[in-house]
Image (cartoon, rainbow, N blue to C red):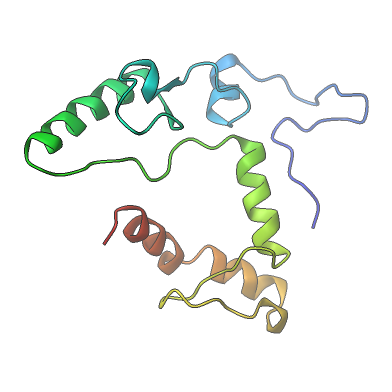
Length: 137
């Protein structure tokens, strides 16, 4: 499988298209607009996660209210750069990371053709599983 490059990079390092700063942020190429939660709340236990500034402050407010109610509220997953997401995709595609079924059991991708792998990887079940796993249900 070939790598997808959001910039359409050429061999000389230039690109076939010019992206705005906003596009670079949206495509996971530039993360300079993000803050770590630790930058606003050093002792909250979520220092590795990077979020939009407004989301950092909203999360800290939510986390503080949850703590007052006896709930430990932590972020399980947050921003990934394009390169990080590409790495996850590649490792799943190549069988280095499992693709799971609806019961969280690994599938044998050697028995699937490319269309079947893509279908399994992008099904509503996969997306739903990510949300329920991330939300701890």
